[in-house]
Amino acid sequence: MKMHALVIHAPRSKCDPVQGNCFANYFRTGVGRGYVVGPANVNRLTIPGSPLVLLDKEAKLRAEGHLIRLARGARTPQQRYDVYFEGQRRVPYKPEILNHYGVALLDC
Image (tube, rainbow, N blue to C red):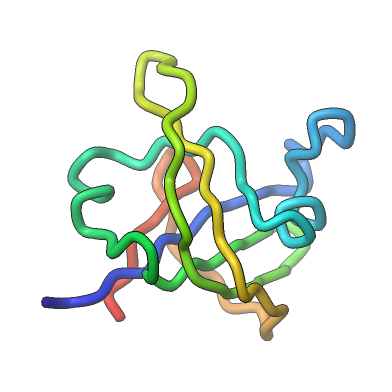
């Protein structure tokens, strides 16, 4: 079975330090909040274990780690997830093509 990596985007322009939804906070805590990861994509991930990429395309920042779990959050009307990951490390920036929700699934 093919492994897939989950990419989540934490753009600088949407950073709210009070909510802690910034690349630096996600990197430090290992939790990205409120991502729409469609049901088909959730089913293609290996949880735990899939690679995870955290991006800030505006600031050209990239970190990689491994997905621990997806925790269901609010429905708006799509199901949103908090993305838990570990082993994150900063790596050289490489852009990825993201969907409208700032998410992508990459073949590994």
